[in-house]
Each structure stands twice: as C-alpha cells, then as structure tokens.
Image (cartoon, rainbow, N blue to C red; front, side, top):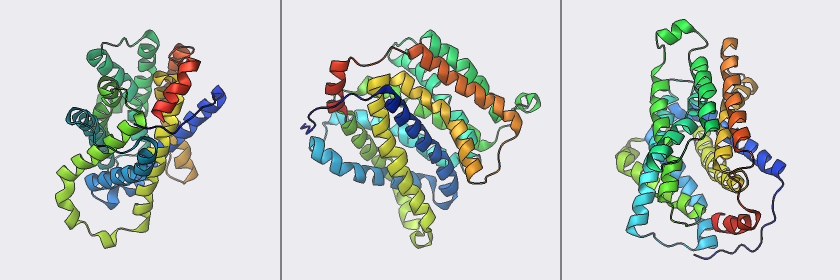
Length: 320
C-alpha cells in the first residue's frame, strides 16, 4: 500500500485533548440526532444508508492514500466479524431510541469501556489495571443512578423501559469492537481497516434488510431525515474516526476511551440548548459520578500508553 505522507509535526497535548473534546461532543450529538430521526425510517435500513454513505465518502481518501485492493479471504472475514458487532450496535441503537431518551443511551454507553476491558481480559489476556477497575464502580453506580432517577424504589422494581434494555444489548456488542480490532489487526493502516469494516458492515445490513428496500416509501422521507443520516455519516463517523485515531497516538487507547464518559453531560447540554425536557435534578449526582470515572482513568493512564516520539510520526503515517 502506498502512503503519500511525508513528515508529521508533533501536536501539543492541549490540542490533542481539545480534539478529543470535539470528538466526544460530536459523538454525543449522534444520540440526540439519532433520537430525532429514529422514527422516520426502519432502523436497519437507516443504519445501512449511514454505513454506505460513510464508506462512499471514505473511498476517495483510501484510494488516493493507499490504493484500493480487495483484502484476502481471511482478512475480509476478520473485517466481517468486527463489522457484525458494530452494525448490530447501531441497529439496536436506532431501535432503542424509539422508546428511550438520548440521555439514557448516552449513560448506558458509559458502561462500554468497562465491559470492553472484561472482554479484553478474556480474549487478549489483558490486565484491566487498578485504575480501570476503580473507574468501573463510579461509572456503573452513576449509570444506574441516572437510569432509575436516583430512586431506590424504581431500582428495586427494576423500572426500565424496553429501549434501555435493547440499547444495553447493543452495548454488549459494541464492547467487542476494541478487543476484536486488537485481536484481528494485522498492521494494516487503521483507515484501511475502518473502510473495509464499513463496507462489510454494509454487506451485513444488505443481507438482513435488503429485502425491505423496495417497501420503503422513499418519496415520503423528509429532508430532515436525510440531513440527519448524512450528519451521522460525516461528523459522527468519519471525522470522529480521524480525531480518535490521531489522539490515540498521543494519549493511548485507554485515555481516549475515557472521553465517552463525557457523553451524558454533553447530551444534557444539547437537550438544554434545543429546549428538550431535562431529566429530574436528582439524576445529576449520577452524571457527576460518571465524570469522576473519567478522571480516575485519565490519572491512572497519565504518562503511560503514549507512543515514543520517534515512533509517533511513523505510526501516524501508517495510521492516517
């Protein structure tokens, strides 16, 4: 594969963290936008269109930067395994948003880093580390607090809506993404791997929902739905991918992953800006606990997991 990159200047850490704040903000909007468009189209078809648009927009970059060639069967199978988990998550996400709130999905998603760590311990024999284990407690307690509105009565009654349970199942799939990437990555550029994950993901969705395409009343789908899908494909898929991959070279994957703990407060801010109904005030301590979990992991990973400065530029050329 050809790379046309030449030299990369190191970025200041404040800029890297700012990039991750932007990425976290963009991903947070995906829950709000997803909620707005979830009822406008079949969830599987909606996810299919999102994946196909993202893959088509990715295609010129991949072709220019690396050349376009079909992976061998084993590599294509690896990409298909990863994309199965990813497409399953997004399908369940859009399905769940028909009966739950953007905040609830954002809160439940904060459980993904902890679940992913457990999967990595089993699949990759990775150690969770004391800080990640410590962070799982406030993150889990905070998520439970928000979901049950700080009510012991609702907790004991396990008063959850169906959307919350559906999205949690999706998170169990999404948690496989990082360990599967680590397990199946064969030193190809991450951009190439992501492109073929989008392509094979589109294949999965065509297989399971292609028969519905001729039943969709395409002429009745309003402009807002199309705008939402394009927004998700560009800003919440392609742009966040590049920001996260670049930041990983400087911060390491664990510290990058902790920015997902910022989704609930960002979703609250978005709901307030757009005039949506805010959750009861008693949910705020739960959100505060989730943010505390982020700082625990950031502190524990501080100074670890960074790439060597000389390796950083070569890794960046290979990755982006």
